[in-house]
Amino acid sequence: MNKFELIDAVAKSADISRVKAALAVNGVTSAVTEALSGGDQVSIVGFGTFSVRNRSARIGRNPRTGEEIKIAEAKIPSFKPGKALKDAVNLL
Image (cartoon, rainbow, N blue to C red; front, side):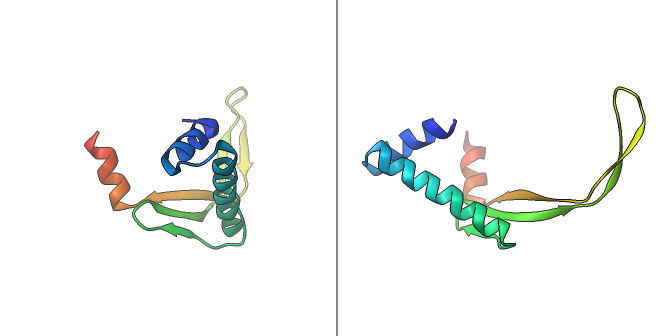
């Protein structure tokens, strides 16, 4: 499912126009992005938790030359699914 299909699903589920559904989806994604950028985490009960994790610096290899390269430390977004989401996926 891509963003356009998600907007259509929200519009049908909430019985609202696609324009309003697009505003809602864009609002949620921007709110999550802002919270994570600010160092916060976002917990949606029954769905999961979005957070930021630190990935340590490490040594990698250039696959073409085999030369070692340094990969810098980075902050990465992370998602941990909640129990209800895990259970729903495992029923399929």
